[in-house]
Length: 489
View: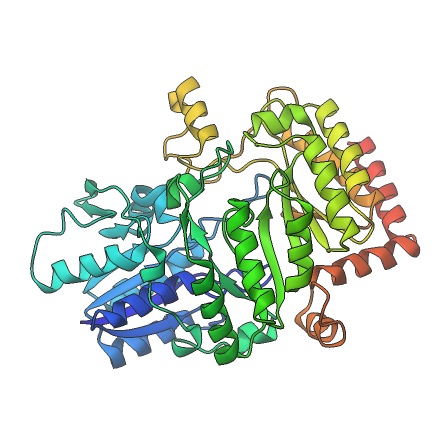
């Protein structure tokens, strides 16, 4: 069959994301004998025209669309993505193509029914796509019933008639090697210095109250063999010329031994890489792991604190305490590893006292050259423990399973108050970034920074910009004007 895969993600902050998940699906589909065409619309100025051209020239039997994110996950001043996807991609596609359209991607694992309704489409696949999508294609090609296809959600006559459980790939080592450069032009991603994304496992056994990883990937770890991971990484670097790598697991360092083994192999192979990772858990770091981070080539890590108050860490379902955070900070600073510390303010039980405790502690934890990345408010997603708790207490709190923007509001402090107090800290310190303000760094300055400081993470450029503003009194003036405006209100 002729299969067209379309990457619909057009969000580019902080950097454009290379759609590696869809590349895995493309590789598995090709290996099964289907003809695959990949349309990446991330940088498209005229997506409608590109869609029209590829439909006319390729004449696909099936079109699969990847829906990565519903929004930017901010709990304050949220940016909803799907209006743009519907108006510039889905609707133009439906006007010229009457064949089978199926949706996939992380968002489908959260709100499959609501997304199908929003786009007025008939099929979506939850969970891993590599096997489920092939099953879907085989059933279509053989004119068999689709009703038992793993992970498939079917909408007919404005109603969901089938909603199957996700189909997860048990052995990730069986997924074919995928080279994104084979499917689309990597040049614009290289200009933005986007990293290659490496997934070492799927699933998550943690129980964070705001998180949907358990719903999207399952609540058990499915580990990929460390040797296979590094061999594929080495091959990708050789093919693409990109040596900037980001590990994108939900939590890279759990299980800790698995992460250590990967880093030991990278060191053994003497690979010259610039590594980073999201979601480091401060409850699972030791001296050996930090040494391995340093020796393997990590230029930046992101530590998911979310809070520096034991009260809110508990309500967030975290498996660590403030003492663990201080211990982790000490280890990482001794190794001189650049760190982004992530905070998520507005948890259940949040108060002015817990906020001030967090601000006080994070000042001690973060060095002046670390970045404190703050999100104000928790975006509630369907299937997260916090969403289930809200529906249990008040079944009428949502009429769309939290599909449209829905922020958690703590009982003892408003999100506006949290934002106000956070803004004050923002003007005091040069190393704070407010996620919902969506600060952008011009491409030209990114390019110059990475050219002259290749071993430094791009977010250091933001720190330099803010430090200059502080030295010349700009932050002080902005703080004065902010206080004056709020007093007059």
